[in-house]
Length: 288
Image 1 (cartoon, rainbow, N blue to C red):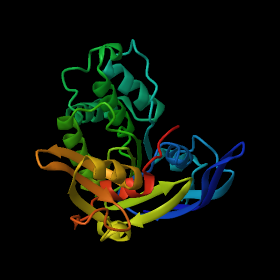
Image 2 (cartoon, rainbow, N blue to C red):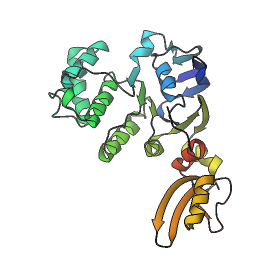
Image 3 (spheres, rainbow, N blue to C red):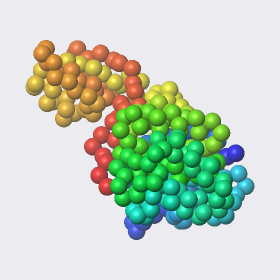
């Protein structure tokens, strides 16, 4: 099984949202990271057939994104998924199963499994209008998994989940990635850091870097520092460097900084993380 994306481009008026992106994906979990406006959602919508590329090709095995066989292999959770507020969770999932061509008997069994998996067992007869944001998000994850898809695309899936739910979700996605392609877009760096086999870093419509966590961190090896500074030094460093973290202490302020050179005489080089890399490339970005 392989998802092939070849020189895919999408432009809105004068803005190029996705710029000649090419990727080959095999079973595993792929984490897509980038600031708001980087082109992530546009890219995912093209993979799901919601948007048509201006140029380029997308296929899963021998099926084009335009074909029904491709759609039958797809599960998709958009950033904001639509639902009927007066439906119960059970009715909504049965309705979505019917749209996906799943038989009623098979749907009942699958829905029971998924309600358990996303921690909504016991809430299936409640109206969706009464659900919290996290419950709605878990319902969205369940509907994306109804047809047991070979390609699962998730756009900001952990939005609205509390820390305990996020850990449970990450574990579920990690298991799912063993025998299917999972593409996960998120702003929550730790979600990607813990479960992604491959990380895709997107900026201004292009894939800036791709690879495993150790591979993708190579550009900032030796560029992450920690130092303890006084108030005047702190102001100068905040102006000149990407500061990942700062903590007030009795002896001064402890800063974690990403930069090409040491920010202070007492700075110590430390091991890089994915959050450091994100700040290195996207400090000052993020407005839609």
